[in-house]
Image (cartoon, rainbow, N blue to C red; front, side, top):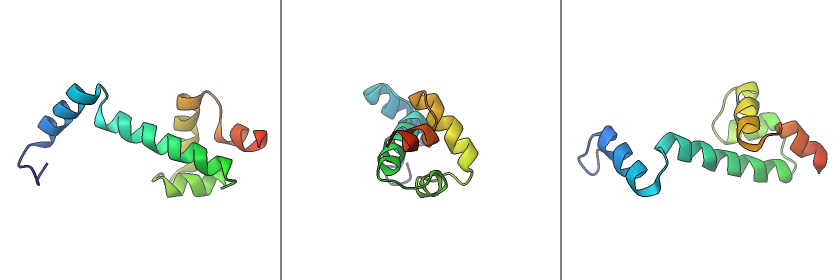
Length: 79
């Protein structure tokens, strides 16, 4: 927002207007997509949480389950 001389609220509004998703929701979706790929590669749940920006692996697990309907450990076990 500083680069374009707009308030962050304006950037958020424009982002939502054009992509039909809030910036934070977009960020979470992106992080979860990356997390899924890392889990498929065999990375531990704790490490995945850290790599995508969550310091608490339990909080990450809740967000992951909310988005995919299964826990990250379930994904790892399926592999």
